Image (cartoon, rainbow, N blue to C red; front, side, top):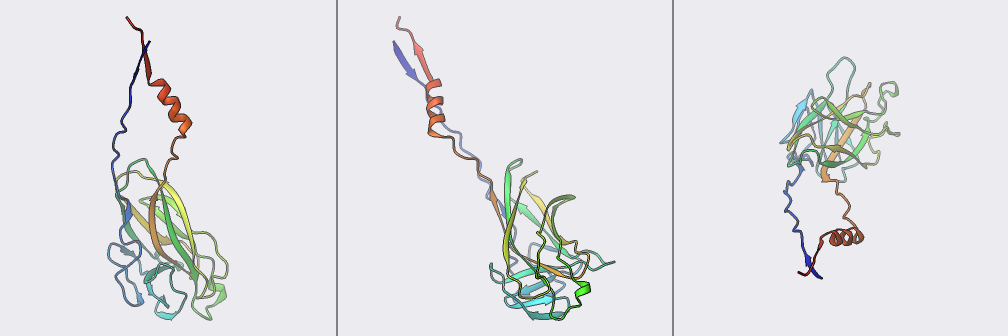
Length: 210
């Protein structure tokens, strides 16, 4: 008996290099009311904070700096006014593939704020009209020095580029602060060596000696 072994070459994949345009909110050098960095469009009048200077509407107070460094965005939703937020874009996506979006988050209010006007912020991440995720509920949001924490959520890409809107749905005036947006593709575990051996066995074709 002779044995013919057929090997299968893997097809090269397509590199997409997914990213969120200016996910670190670079571009500013000082806290500013009603501003958005390059690559983002403001919704209503969001705040831009920088370093230890945190913007609360028209007030600037001391606050814990972002773990990502530099500037970060703050937003709130006051009753009877449009939601504050920003809109940007995610690019380099592969349709139908899953991605994890990670971000830094904290919440706070300016010192001596009226407790009746504060609540845990609800910041929503959206793409078009589709809700991707909400920020978690937090405690200690009445302090400008509440620590930052990192969170993430997973979504499926619907195209090679997707809009990304981040806005506040808070029923009261507490600010939510966002920074350090990153994208990472959800990887599929590599097949085990046992599985490869099984495929190799299937690739062996026996030919009878004539």
